[in-house]
Each structure stands twice: as C-alpha cells, then as structure tokens.
Image (cartoon, rainbow, N blue to C red):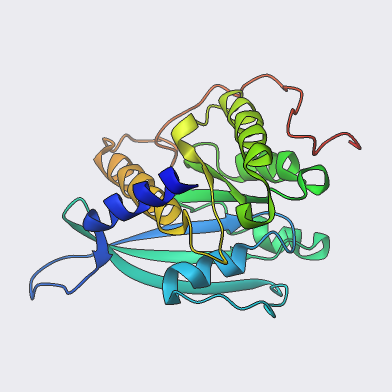
Length: 231
C-alpha cells in the first residue's frame, strides 16, 4: 500500500484541479462506475470529487452523478462520473448508461470477493459497448490484510488478462483513506480521453458503424476471483 500511495503522489503533479485559460477548450469524458451494491462506488466518487468519506452512505437509487475538471497531460478534461445502482431491480437502468461510456470502472469489494457479480457486470458492459476501455478496481483494501491484497490482485490480473484488460488497469483502493482513488480516476480520464480522440480521428465512411474498434471477444474463461461459483 505504501508503494501505491507514492504512485498517487507522483501522479498528482499531472492531475490537478483546472483553472481554464480564456480560450482553452475542455474535453468532456464519461466515466461509468458499475458493480454490486455496497462495494463503495459512491464513496469512491465522493472521495475523488470532494475529498470526503461518509460511513453512513446509503445505496444509490437509480443513478447518481458528479463531475470534476482536471488536467491530464496538459489537456483540460471534465470527468463526468456516473454512479450506477448495483441492485438487481435497477440493472436495466444501469446498462443504458454503458452505451456511450468513455470508460467503464468495474468495482468490487476486496473483502467480499465470493459475493461479487463482476463477471455478469462485465458481460452486460460488453453487450452494450464492445470497445470502451475497462478498469477493474478492488476497493476497501483497508479491510484486508497485505496477504489478502496480494492474492486478490494476482487473481484479478489473471481475470482481466483473459478479457483483454491490461494489468495496469487493475487497481486497489480505499475510499476511506483515499489510497489509490486519484490514480483510478487519473487512469480513467486518460483512457477515456484517448478513446474519444480515436473516435474523432476515425475517417467518416458511408455506412460505417459508430464503433471505432472491433474487438474479438475472448473465450468464456473460468473465473478465478472466487465470485462465480454459484453460476
């Protein structure tokens, strides 16, 4: 966790609140948080936007929304964050927000991996949006031992690799302490900005689809996160 905290501090030099120059244009990117109820999506968003943590945070009903303007690599980026409800009865509402996402952040509780539905969430994301970058976040590291964190990170990276998600997109966080939170949203903003740029740069072709890239779906792998034994 100490190394992770150092990484976050180093990156803050390039990830700061924005004061726009008079003629500077700001790029808006859409970041969607998904995952089961009570994994800490709302807390991660509020920690990033307002630098606060509230133990009494209740489950999101439908969709919550916040934004923060930051500077990434010299570019002013307005990070539009959509916090989706993890409850089963609101899942259809959540999936409607995946279609135009610039990046999807999949969140799971590192202390409760066997109770996660991360495989189901990932499938729903890819049904709605085949190409948006994904980031996998293991939240609540403050409730796990160092050994549990290492094991969970290794398993999560294996899971991600089989779904074309690179190891740099698998992160551990604590919304309570703030560890890793800025790093997640820095990465999300960077990936979403690149994704938006790639789409804009795509040549306009008559009859072309709206997708910038076509990915070959990976084979259905066995989940090693311990979250799918009941499926």
